[in-house]
Image (spheres, rainbow, N blue to C red):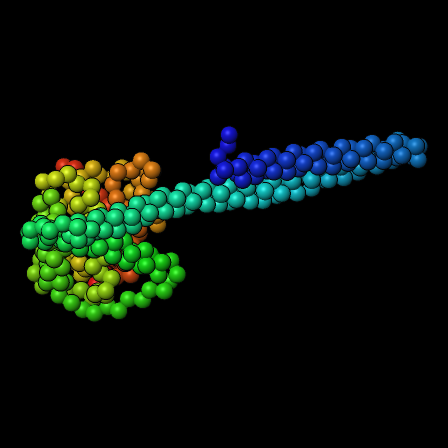
Length: 324
């Protein structure tokens, strides 16, 4: 049985095949009709003229006219065929893009459903445990910390969805101000590391007194999404390195890890909205496919360019070059 998503494309192919057959039949009939007209006019010419020279001249004129009509039919047919081919390719590409988007949206809905339910269920369990049992103070603190962590995860997901919606509707404006990015990033990363409590080793290589104009509301989303990706896809005890430095007239921010890496074939796709490698029904890692989409948009709004590279000896490096 054919998948529902491929049925419109299958019907479209049938329609195109039908149009091409009709087009070929039209061309054949036009040529046949011109040949018949030529034959009839040649016969009439023979019957009405007794002078052989005149018959030959009239016959040559008719033949020339026939070839001229053949050329006209061929030219018109070629133009029609080219236009039909262009229309076919554009419609087919549109079908494929729509099918791809539908697949990504399906994955997004599956992931969001899981991402919303998991922290809610976890926080509920922690709080119910606190209510039902008389626990020691340390255990209470642990459960409350876990519940706060779950709500933070939920809050970040909602923020990403809202930000992606604003980006899509072009309803997001940046309010940039010049800051000491070195101090801003270092302080922010210290808080982030405490919050995430990653199993990886995180090192900060931040050049002092790097100044750049940023929007304090949205800039943290760039580093948070990149850092979360590194934590998510890197093994325990591996290295995550964050570098900030001046380069020429600009500023370079990079986040590198020693994780699974990104296949070269996927590097052009990972910044698309909803895009995630693999299928959501079988994927184990958490996520919605919005993080890198947001990173790319915000980096460009801050006059930056995002580059994705292979880290050495393994893993991935995201490098953002901000122009002054």
